[in-house]
Length: 232
Image 1 (cartoon, one colour):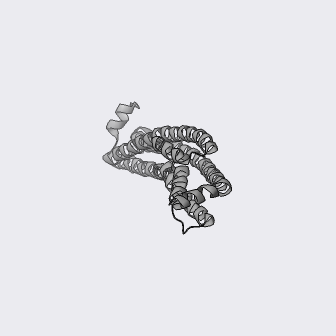
Image 2: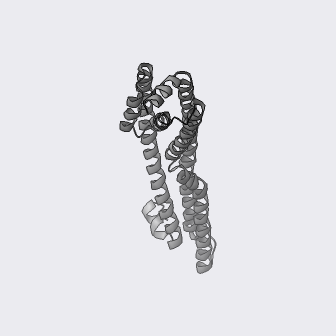
Image 3: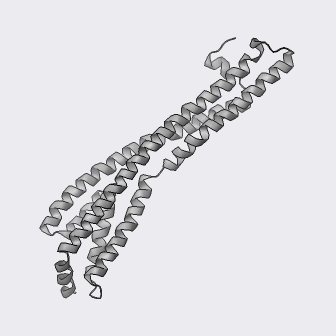
């Protein structure tokens, strides 16, 4: 019997072929998500580092408006999203004389929480699909295994014998689909766990950065609120 891939494909039933095609599509999707997430997170980290550097220099000079504007060109970064939203909220509240500095800081904290939630959702985009593929691909392969065993028994019934030559095609079909299912699932699970750890680390960075900004505004931003309120 010829055990080349082309020969095994020709001997597979329609069900096993459907399983292999399904696993191939799942594999292509997971690879696409892996590449896209790797590039997106790398760009986001790079832009976040750049914005933090700009923000430190700008806030030292008291240039808050420019700090908000600078984030517009770094939209892919998670820190520009969160910190600029916090500064924008602080700027808006400063024009409202009915708000005390404490109330302004509370509103800024809420703005930081909302923007952090959006940023985390952007970072996690596609990871749910990886988790689904990692958990379901082995079962899809197992379904192909069952179909291969059924095929082997059908060949045994058709030929009236149970020799190795009779059942080898069905067994090969079953093993190939099983192996293919594991081949798709293992990288998906590994990469999902990797990106999950990366995103959790980013969540800590976002929380630390937003807390530091709120603390800065609490210490040095009250004069800015008073001056802005007096102008209004």
